[in-house]
Length: 299
Image (cartoon, helix red, strand yellow):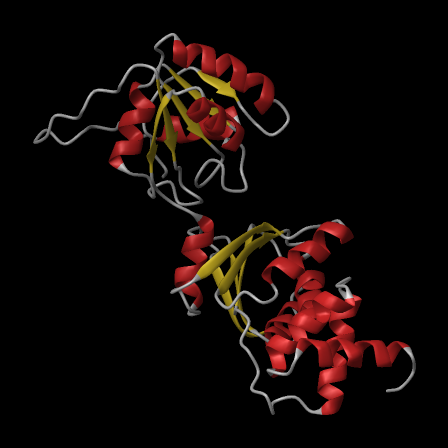
């Protein structure tokens, strides 16, 4: 938006008044400022106070629509302290809007603690739905949308990463997660080594001028990224889910490669044998015996 726009409600319908002592959880644009609902604008223009992840970024959004409201910061490092004060204001009857920098508060963004505490305290709360980077990327990916899981940001710590792989490795639906552009190539290569070839879509700079979707198999996407001088922007990765291999679908060497890959992820022999059993349709006890035999040099 190049010019400041003053927001006006349609004259044909009288908007409902805000309810005192209510926390309004408001989704905001993930890029294009036009992606905001009339209800969200009405709430932001009517509440007593806006709790924002970054007051400067939210200030720009308000300015774009000619709105002026008191702003307080509520981000990861001060959310615990700010939540106490915001709950007090809500209990006094004030109306508070909670927003993150982009998208839905509480989804890999600050806000979950305040929402949880408000619900526990019996404070009225409601959501003004809107943009979500994960769902936007999923819809545009071309992958299955019947069942999906959100994995948040891909873990950096090795121990947490192993647990993440264990949790999502056998999920049959589509997987959604966020990643830094600097770590994207390494993460995709890591997932290919751990899970093998799957279809993938890397969504970059959603709803913005340089929006891009890179679709294909993991090797194809990795190859294209390797030819890119520098990946920039905010990244969402959409990854095909796990599909069981038919009983006769794995040759001996393939079975060994998969088994060793599972062990390399940090899975115990018991966990790995269960995964192999799912892959092959064979008994888990037989898979366990096979894993033990490798340690003994029988393979």
